[in-house]
Length: 81
Image (cartoon, rainbow, N blue to C red; front, side):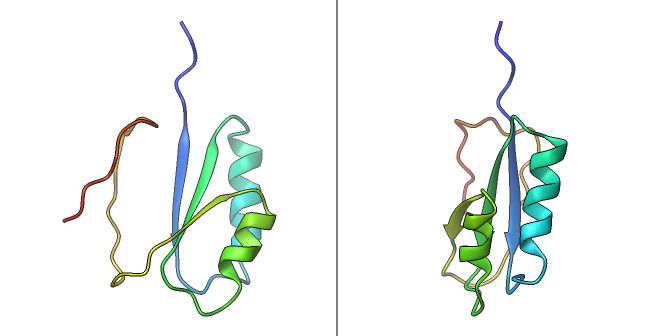
């Protein structure tokens, strides 16, 4: 039986000053996990810094809101609310 896949989801907005450390800390704590940064229309360099730190970056261009998902597998898809 294989290990379960782990994904870390980090929603953010204008977090250029902190996002590299957040990504690095999650990668250190959970080295097998994929870290996804969901950039919610930041006007700074959040996306570029997160990508440089090793995160998979997704950009959300809609209105700011967070949908929390506990126990999601890598194959599940969040639904809009």
